[in-house]
Image 1 (cartoon, rainbow, N blue to C red):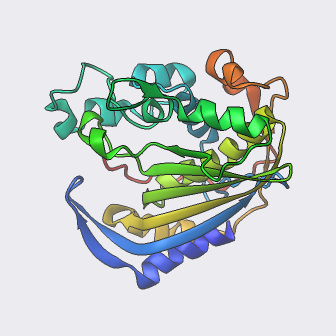
Image 2 (image 1 turned 45 degrees about the vertical axis):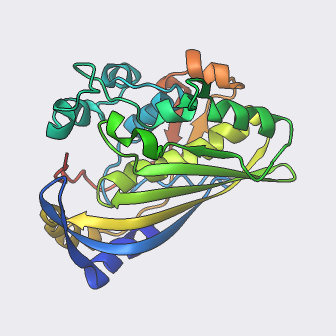
Length: 283
C-alpha cells in the first residue's frame, strides 16, 4: 500500500499532462515505476484505501490462462471487464477482424496459448513454461508474452500487461511482469492482484516455492476525470494491513486451471478496506 500511494502522489507531484488519442482524455503521466509483491510471505496486495474487487481480477487471470477470446467466457468465470472493449470500442466495432458480439480478437491469453507461427502452426507459451519449471528447468527464457506486433490489429485492445518472465533459483520461483500502460486508480488494482496470483499459482502447480513478484510499469497515469477523487478522497485515507490469499491446494496442474477451477477455489482472509470509490473508466 505504501508503494502504491507513493506512486499516486508521485504522478500528482511530477506528472506531465498527455493527451490520449484513444480515449480523448488527458492523463497526468510519469515514466517508469517499480512495485514488488512478497508472495513468499503471502502479503496479498489488495488496495485498502478503497474497496478492491479481487474476484473479478482473478477471474480475468483465469480467462487469460485458458486463452479466452470472448467476453461471454469471461462473464461466465465471474468478470465483466471485457464487455466494454469487446462491444463499445468504436475502432474495434468497425474492424473487419471482429467476429461479432463479445468477440475480443487475438488478445492476451490467445497469444499466450496460441501464438501463430508463419507456417500457421501455434505455440503454447504457457505450457512450455509449466513443463520446464515442473522439471526444475530455467532456460532464461521462461517468458509468457501477449504482445504480438504482427497481430495488434486483430484484437480489440493492445495488451497493457504484456510480458511475464519467470525465474527459478533452486526451488524458489520469481516473476517479473512488464506493463506498457497503467491506469493507476483502476487498472493497477487489478494488475497487482494478477501478478501476485500468477506467481502463486505457477509456483503451486510446478512444485516450487513462491518468492517475490516484480512489477515494472512504463507509463503510469491518472486520467483527468479521476484526479479529484484521488487527491481529495483516496490519498487522504490511512492504509490498513494487507490480507492473505488462500488457493485451493487441490489445484496441482495446468489442466486443473483449464478445466474445473472457479472463483470458489480462492479465498481472501483478513481484508479490511475503506469504502469503494467509483472512478470513471475510459474505454
